[in-house]
Image (cartoon, rainbow, N blue to C red; front, side, top):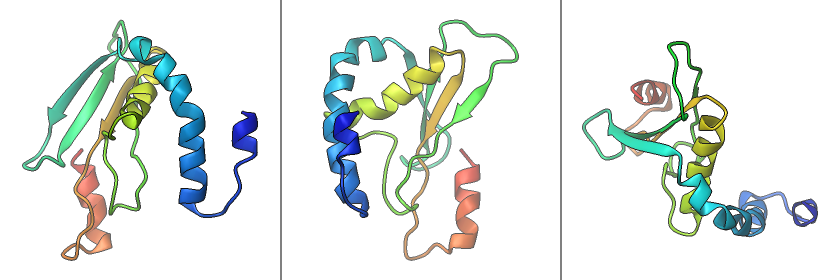
Amino acid sequence: MERIAQVQGRQINDILVPTLNAFLPILEAKRASIQKTTRESHQYGPTVRHTLDVYYPPTTRPDIPILVFSYGGGFYMGGRTLPAPADIIYHNLGSFFATRGFVAIVPDYRLVDSLVQLRTFSMRCSGS
């Protein structure tokens, strides 16, 4: 955590890259354990952006809590999967909550483009 405390800057990239550099070695060391969590991908709409990953706890019950995580990106960038070695980040998030009894869902959604008005964007996300 000392490395995180030393991060300087006010812009996202000033903070994001050093933070990733601090946490990725820790996640990489635990990759095998993280990937033991059951994950299934499901398409819920007509495009590849209409896909979500569901992380399941070891046991289920009728009243199981569900956590839906929407990644950042200002609705114009981002995705539920990242290129290696950062590909473990959302899997870690899903695994963390699944091992604590939650069903964790990380959906992709259509991103804002020049044809989308922001007021209709919430309807795009609601389908997930």
